[in-house]
Image (cartoon, rainbow, N blue to C red):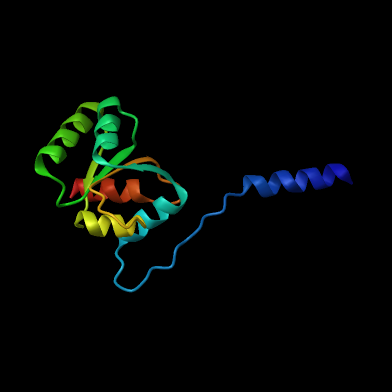
Length: 130
């Protein structure tokens, strides 16, 4: 009897539960994926962290706001290109990117370590090919 319960528990652990967010009206594919990534994944905010992650190759992807300072954006894009990290420029200002991340301040650079249950890396890859 105890062996059967142990087997049932193992079966339940193996099944991966995927969570889906309900999209709000006016919310695009990118915003939904970013919000889900912030809820379930691992990330860091800020230019200095983004620059270090791009230089050392620690992040899986880097997201830039469209109004990030040009010299900073060029810096991060250069280091990311050397490290082979994809850089994704969203069509959002830093204030809008901050609100998507649930922060009350502007966010110009977002470094993604683990996308969690979102598909942000696939979306970034798809947008990069166009």
